[in-house]
Image (cartoon, rainbow, N blue to C red; front, side, top):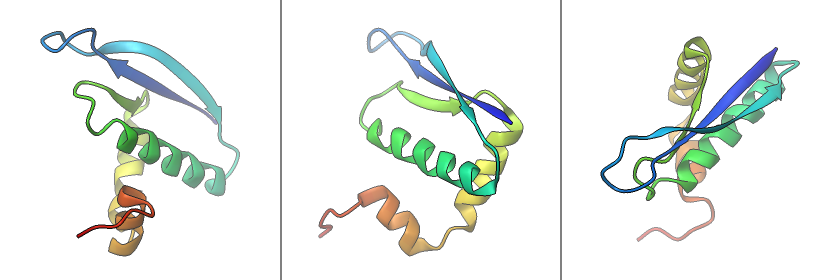
Length: 89
């Protein structure tokens, strides 16, 4: 299965986000899909302070599958994915 990730960004603060580029990823099994979900989450977390910049799945069904996967993760895994090895007070 080929999965397309799209990167959306905006030119300036008051503009609307538009698709800047897309990437194709070949997914051959569930392990590869989970790896792509981790990559997707990591990329979006790196943009959390960039208003209007984000990655999204071109396929809405895969986006729904990602959201279901993320919701099923335990809280400690979500915490580590968000903060990494940082110290939280």
